[in-house]
Image (cartoon, rainbow, N blue to C red; front, side):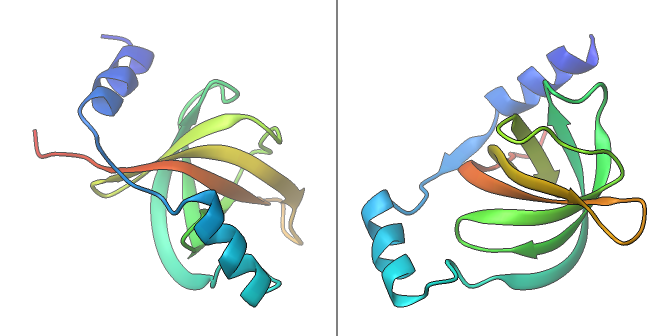
Length: 121
């Protein structure tokens, strides 16, 4: 089985969870001009996507109700769709921004489109 087929099989088993509606997010943005509260984390994940040549190990820097901030060794194309696997959770989303950091790594923001729980095998 190819890596793409493995990823498709994994995604097909995900139990997707509801995300906040646009109305809920808009109301929250009006209250907080910066957007959703970001919570710093120090976690590792695996990033997959059609814009990537291969899976990438990434560091998760922060997480919010609407997305994830990551550090990655490769640049990500803004607008591309990606899947981020964290333990038994998968976040499918869109790369909103990506920039080089002071080191040779890149920081990127992913807007969550779907969040799901991966059932045990």
